[in-house]
Image (cartoon, rainbow, N blue to C red; front, side, top):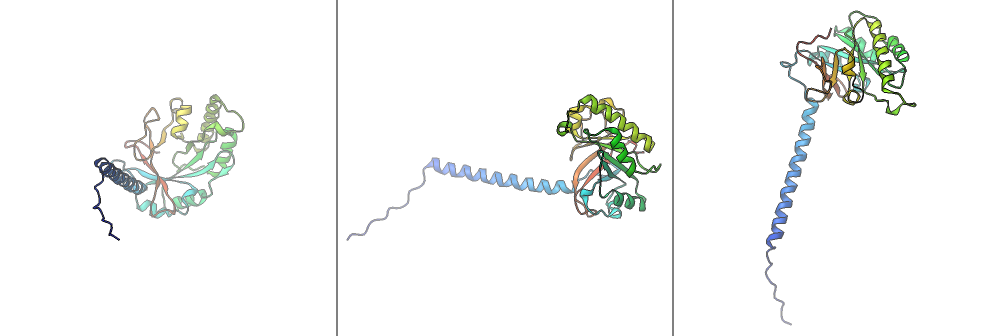
Length: 249
């Protein structure tokens, strides 16, 4: 039987070679893009503004941070700390007493934060706040965190009602602390309710890595990185800076 003759392999058509080359380039670009995103994510976890640009820097702590070493926090550059105390009408931050006492023990200037709940009355929320926060002339101005919208409230809450209850809460907390409050307004809350224009209080805004501009007027404090990883805490913390020339006290 005659042996079959093996023909030499044919070169792929030019169009097919171009397609393979294009797929290879696309794959390389995707891999490079993924690597860049990973690098940015890791870099973002450790990013904070330069001290030369913002000399007055500090941290905002909640129980989500886990155990916090306050002396280490000060050693890495925190000159003040804010700690969450109360949430709405009933909830309280589980780490408040520990963080508050630790800051006072090492002489760290400390302020407190109440998280506003648009579903609850101002009277109930201020009662929750005053139980947690002592009258102390050495405290920094208290802050009211404005993040939760009224969309999930059990009953419909009008914007006028939210504004009215917030005005009452601001007055009640200021009577208790003796200082004007800071309004720690999230972007979604500000865009929905526009509180910055109606309240003559210093603003504390949040935006990772870039100065926020949604408050419609200059801010006093800025959460520049809401998930900064440091050796001072078990979990990420929010890193806060003060506008140069601004006054915290």
